[in-house]
Length: 111
Length: 112
Image 1 (cartoon, rainbow over the protein chains, first blue to last red):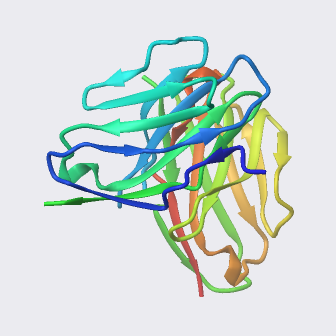
Image 2 (image 1 turned 180 degrees about the vertical axis):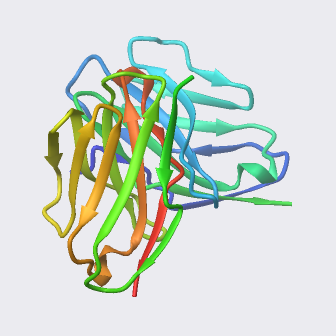
């Protein structure tokens, strides 16, 4: 069974609009961490945002924010005011006793 | 500050030739080190990880091997490359799991 599931292989958004990328996960641990990574065409993996499971407050980094629904095991990424440079593959990841990546969502930003 | 270096950036090798990819970390001690492979347009596949010098765990049986001769050096090797070894290889390190991973810039390997 997939531990981290990204059900949207591809997404597109108009420049300056908002887009939400979905991620669900499964873990039996109470102590874990969640991450979103961005992989632009250069293929360098860049950490976008992290969330500690024990924190109820959703993490925010500038235009990037998450909607962390612990009971539903959902961890979506919202990108506001989308820019052309946001075009990339986005990976959701879970760290409990191991590290698990989702299969990625390819985001296209339309000018 | 902590940095990770990975080289070479691009490599074209004939089938049957050996391989050596190197990854070094600066600014931290006793990191956990990882090698991932990513096929084109696909997700990340964990190949090897190491929690200390000489300690290597393999996740996938394959034509590759890894070594950690020094605390901050991680090497991915093959004695004879196969066409199926082509892909994008990423090295990563972590110190504490709540920090996530920091990735190198990757090596694009093409076996011809």
